[in-house]
Amino acid sequence: MKYVIGETIIEASDSWSGPNGYRFVYAKDHPNAPKSNQMYEHIVVMEKKLGRFLSNEEVVHHIDGDRSNNHPNNLMVYKDNAVHCFNHYRKIALDSCGNADYVKCWICKEWDTPSNNMISCRGYAHRICSNEYRNKWAKEKRRRLNGSSWN
Image 1 (spheres, one colour):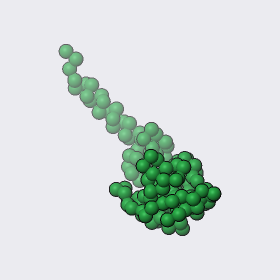
Image 2 (cartoon, helix red, strand yellow; image 1 turned 180 degrees about the vertical axis):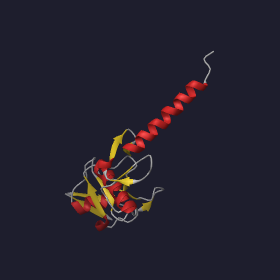
Image 3 (tube, helix red, strand yellow; image 1 turned 120 degrees about the vertical axis):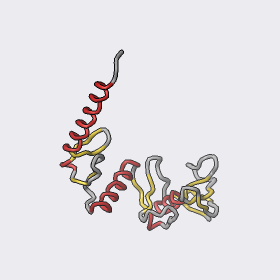
Image 4 (cartoon, one colour; image 1 turned 60 degrees about the vertical axis):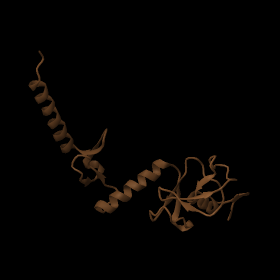
């Protein structure tokens, strides 16, 4: 199987599935191939569709979520992994609560608007959940200190 990407012709063998569900091709002439010459098939397919090689920052996404479905119409490119992850999070929000703009409180696990949450080191949390959590752990810390012996 030959792929023409820009002015480069890539010889690729038949594809096979890896343990992670992604399909691989052997592409020895690909400039970004590792020493094993095994490339993810979806990357080679997208590069053929675009007519250029992908940058190291770009990420190919399977629209239907099926890692083995490498049809060109099922693939899209994100400029970097941050945008890719952000859109995955929005899909999870949409599927969970019906609104892609909502965020999940890590304490009570409820979805709500970002304006009703604050950002903490562990993610979004409602102010009331955060205060209750902080008070609970402060009380527990005091109990442990008062119950311990310092002899």
